[in-house]
Image 1 (cartoon, rainbow, N blue to C red):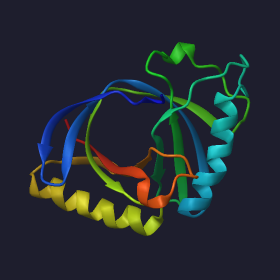
Image 2 (cartoon, rainbow, N blue to C red):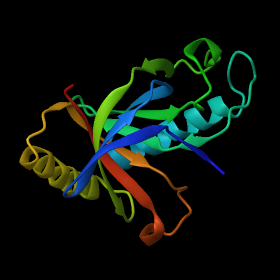
Image 3 (cartoon, one colour):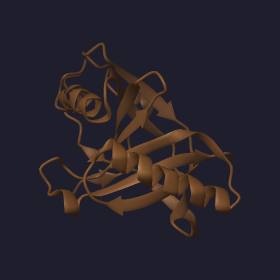
Length: 170
């Protein structure tokens, strides 16, 4: 079974939940292009990394979700979450120059889950819904929306589970 990023639910709201994510380590790739193309290109480099294309030639278990964050510059940051027992010192150096390692501290996040395929239009619509719900709950956001994909590309779209998230100010 695929390990999932570790969090605890702090509170439930209308249309979303507030989560406390534990500190984690990400391996990230920045790609220019539209939502789907950037995500697909970065995925290959990230998959290569966990398959052994790293300084230690170490194979690393796939975790969920794959995280994608659009940037204002027309780029996207696509991230794999390292297994929960990895500390930043445990993460092997990537061979691909496109990949970077980042440690993320514990943080609060608003998360809204939904079913369906991946698309920029779906991300925008679900994201707008999350932002309205968070504002209605009187919570303050930090940063921009990002997207978490939990299922492989070959799974039928109507069965896929995804989330749109935004970090919250502490």
